[in-house]
Image (cartoon, rainbow, N blue to C red; front, top):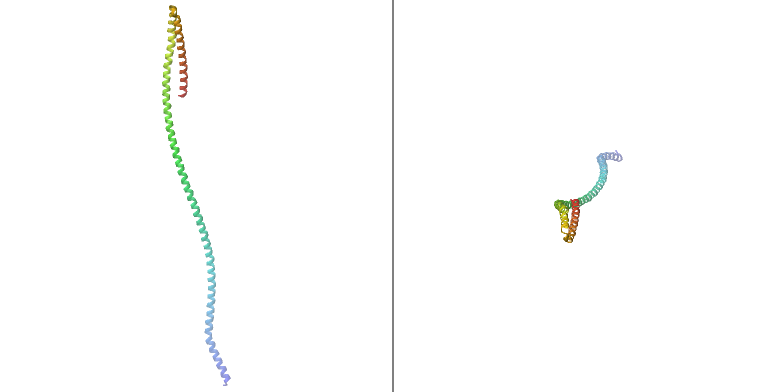
Length: 202
């Protein structure tokens, strides 16, 4: 066997052995490639998931911001409601105070009306007393008139017939009697007017 043939055989054997030795490495490299591909896919999916999480987080942050704004708006509205309630309580208290004043005025008015009723009742009693007294005065006046007509005039005539010298004195007395009758007439008229006014008041 020549050196070239030996070299070729050795090269072939070495090639076989090298191929046999490299094959596991190739398999390992392919496995690494596959695993790297899987990892790249996982990383890509992870990036996608992270981006999705970021997007969702942004939505959540926006929702939280809107929720905070809504809560602040509710706080402001609640504050306004509390202020309205406080003002309403003040108005109700003012109405109660004013109602108490009105009730006191009504109670005082009732007392004044009762006093007025009592005064009217007393006035009615006074008017009745005046009516009774006026009736007595009218009766007395009527008696005086009858006495003047039936007795005094008759006596005057007798005196005039029997005592002519005293005619002048009688004339003077007659004038005084006429004046008395006039005064009595005025008194009757005045009493009648007072009676009418008292009847109107009663």
